[in-house]
Length: 163
Image 1 (tube, one colour):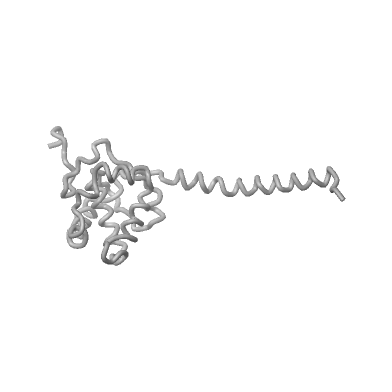
Image 2 (spheres, one colour; image 1 turned 60 degrees about the vertical axis):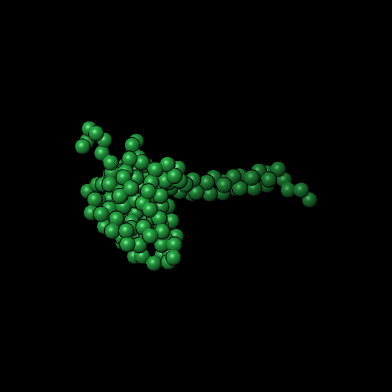
């Protein structure tokens, strides 16, 4: 026996209402995630002291496998620009050092991240880079116009007008 037209309409309305409710719940979460990166690395998200300490950690634990220059310039820009800073932090934490991934403290990984930002010409700021991955998700990697102007030592190269 076929259901009445009214019963079918009622079922369609119920399904439509359920879909609207599901979309209303899910879509704002996606939009919020995409819009949550309200700051960028070009705004100074780490301190100079963190970058200096990160340089020390890098020299002791990272430099033996790869020179600092391998984490700068066009390859870095192509891979990381536009992504949340938490992506880079997670990559470093889960993949480095190559011989013992995940073996550093969260603070050490954060310091190395600050050093990598400095190597890529991103400015230091007044507030320390957070060790909280949720906060790092709110920061988008954005290289300054003259990115790649950092020296291999991680010190930003100054243009002639700034020397």
